[in-house]
Amino acid sequence: MSSDLAFALRGVGTAVAGNFRLRDVTFELPTGYVMGLIGANGAGKTTTIRCLLGMRRIDAGEIELLGHRVPGPVELRQDVGVVLDHTCLVGDWRLTEVERTLRPFYDRWDAAGYRRLLGEFGLDPRARVKDLSRGMAMKLMIAVALSHQARLLVFDEPSSGLDPVTRDELVGIIGDFLVDEGHSVLFSTHITSDLDRIGDYVTLLHEGRIVRTGTKDEILDAYRIVRAGPDDLRGLVGVQLIGARRTPAGSQALVRTEEAALLGGDVLVEAPTLEEIAVHVGARAPRREPDPGVEGDPARHASSLSTGGAS
Amino acid sequence: MIAVARMAMLDLRTVAPHRYQGLAVFGVCLLFLTHNPVVFVPALVLLLTSQVAAHPFLIADKAGLETLYAMLPLRRRTVIYGHYAWAVASFVATAAVGTALTLLLARIQSAPLGGRTLLTVLTLSWAVFVVNVAIQFPLFVRFGYSRISLLSTFLPLALVMMALARLHLTIVTFAELQTWLPLLWVAGAAALVASVAVAVTADHRRVRNGAAAPGRER
Image 1 (cartoon, rainbow over the protein chains, first blue to last red):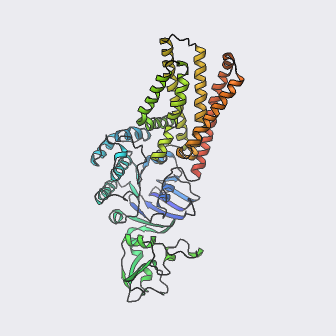
Image 2: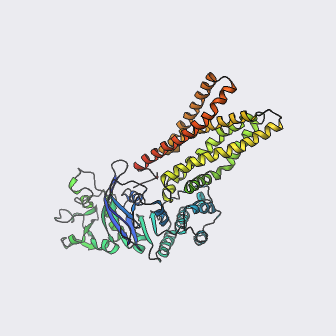
Image 3: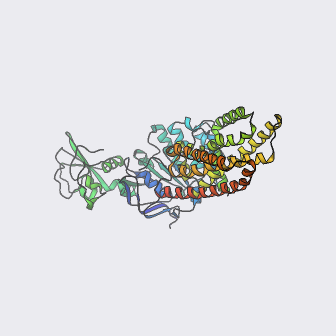
């Protein structure tokens, strides 16, 4: 087990309801950094986080969290703060009762810090959980996570449904948290603009598989967005088009950077944004016969152009 | 042990916002049973304690507290033990307050109420409590409150009715009933222990199936 890693998943697999399962999920985050876990709805982000937190059993692989193998000692949860897209607290509790209820479970609970954070976040201690807006509820969960002095914050889609001002505040909060070099953040989202600002590492997840993981710059360098006329991307040899889309005005796809050089001069090649990468990787292909040899490979969605991509 | 007590306290705080409803039930029982203090404790246990003990499961279903339990530094086993500890504490509190009020009402009304009668009433209350909790809790743990609430209400009730009918047929005198009391206490405690074991196994199975923290996934 490495103390330099906030967490690591190695070859993790787990079956979920229906036919969905995580397959061979492998990625890691060094201590002191922010990782964005990107994927479309249903890609497996929440399942991955649940596996990481020991909330779901895994069928294959191993997970390391803050130097311990998961499932580890329950005391490990003293060091992990979880912020979900919902509060999972009793709606009738006032925010003071939240503190009184949770404080006994944590060895390093900072009561004064909790009250200070409520003040900083503009939360009324007398307010009830059920009366909080989505953004306020998220701030409450952050206040709880920071008050027990977690070393790793795990956010599961915190910014979905938040207005831009609150999302900006969230980015600021995460920035403050990371002032301590021993702190790390895992941030699952499908809103990539937040990651453009704070993400150090990015992991792309699609249909339960890791598409690519690495530093944000590595991910951005790994792909190119290509744009061309409606039929210019047809019949290319040696180039896998990822999440290709065609409209009457033109066609567009994501390609691996090393393959971009194979494209002709009529094709416009540009550096993609994280959002473009996420959109194309997450695009679904028209239904066709499965090809076991390339299962889970996003490139399989790109072998033919489609106007029906779900991007 | 401390962790179990903390979990039981979490259950107390979970039901605390609904304390006025509980007090209302208590008041109604008091109002209707003033003239018959002997049945006050069993009525309270049947109508109030059983509901209060199971209430954390209801709130947990509504508020997603299973996720909270999974996030807190608590073993799954401790969560289960805590639920049972909360239930037993509810019974003890109800029995203590109910017995005090029963004695008070009997004195006010100058009604005869001996120690044997009181012990019999408490034992029957214990039996009613155990039947409810021992059957309901493993079902709640395995399936969740909302999925099983109808059946889990019916099953203990049916068992109590059958037991009462059987009791009426086989035990005809108060003295005969007295001989059964120690057995009822011991059997009740054993049933609770067995129920805890079943609930822990059910919980283990549910976690293995990936439902430790129900909710949206993927």
